[in-house]
Length: 463
Image (spheres, helix red, strand yellow):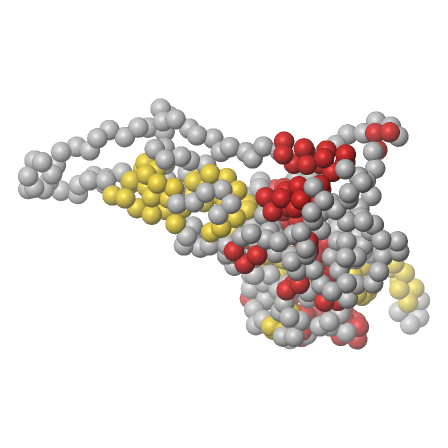
C-alpha cells in the first residue's frame, strides 16, 4: 500500500535559513521524482528543491517567506506503492489494488501566486505627494560616521530583497523595528514604517548607532530625478542575480577597508606552454581547452600556501581570524543574468588539466542558470579575470568573508630591460584587493611578487 513520506531539503552547501520564494505545487498534485516542489533563494543563487520520489502531495509544510535549511521538511507525499517482488500468500483483502492516482497530465496545476506590486507603487506615490514630511531630512554637509555603524552586529537584519525595497522607498532600515524572529525586518515592517511616516508618527530607531541620523551612514539621501523631463528614457528592471549581488557588493565595499596592490607578471614562457598543451589536447581529442585562468588558479593556490593570512576569514567581531587548511578558489563567471562566482575545490591537489575541465563544466552550468548554492560556497579566495576583454588594471571588490581577491586584465607585449637591451615580453597585469584589517601593504606586495614569480616559472608550484 501507499506510504506517506517526507520530502526534505537536500544538501545545499554552507547555506542555512534560506527563504522560500515560490511554492511550485499544491496539495493534491501528483508529482514525479525530481519534480520541483519549492524554490529557495539564497544571497547568491536560487535553488529548486526536487521531490525525492513520485506520488501525491498530501500536505505542504512550508509557506512563502518561511526559511529552510538542509534536512528541513518541505511536504508529505503519498509515494506510489512499489510492485511486489514475489507472489505473497496474504489474504485477498491485503492484495486489493490501490485507488487510481490522478496523473500529472490530468491533475490541476496550481501556479504560484505573485505578491501584487500595487501597494508598493501606492506607497511611492504617497511619499512623492507628501514631500513636506520626508522620512529622513537631508543633511548638508553629511556628518562623520564611526566604524561601529557598519560592523555586522550593528547592521539591520534584513534580506537583500527587503534592503532593495527599503532603498526604493527611501527608508532608513535603522529606523525600522523588525517583527520576525531575531528582529528580522520584513517588507510589511517597511510598509508600516512608511505609513507611520506619512501620518507624522515615525517610530523611534531600533538599532541605529549613536549619531546615526538619516540613513545609518549619515549620507545624503539618494537623488530623485525625473529623467523623462530631459529626453526619452526606458526603465529596465535589474535581474534577480544583480539585485542580490548588488546588495552584497555594497555591504562589502562599505564594511571592508579595501586597498589594491598592482603588479605585472611575465607570462611569455607560460603562454607558449599553454599553446603547446592545447595543440596536444586537440590531437588527443580530450575536449579540454586550457585557458590562462586555469594556470592562475594553480599559481594562486601556491601563493595562498606561502601566505596563509590570505587564505583566511575575519569573523563578525573583527577580532578573530580563521585560517583555512584547504584551498577552494572561486572564479567570476559572466552570465546573461549577471556575475556569479563558482568555486573549484582543492585546487592544490589537482592538475591544471583537471582544473580547466571543472572550470568549463561550472562555467556552462552558470550560463545555463543551473548553478546551485553548493557550487558557489566554501571559497577561500576569488579571481576576476577580464583578460579576454581588455583593460590595464581595476579594483575588484572583495567577496566577504574572504580577505582578498585577484583581478586580472589583458596581457600585452612590453619592452623589458634584460641588463643589456630591451626585449619584448608578454606581461599580465595583476590587481590584488585586500582587507587592510588583516593584510598590510608589505604582505600584499610580497604576495603579488611571489605570484608573478610562479607565473613566470610554473615549476615553482612543485616546490
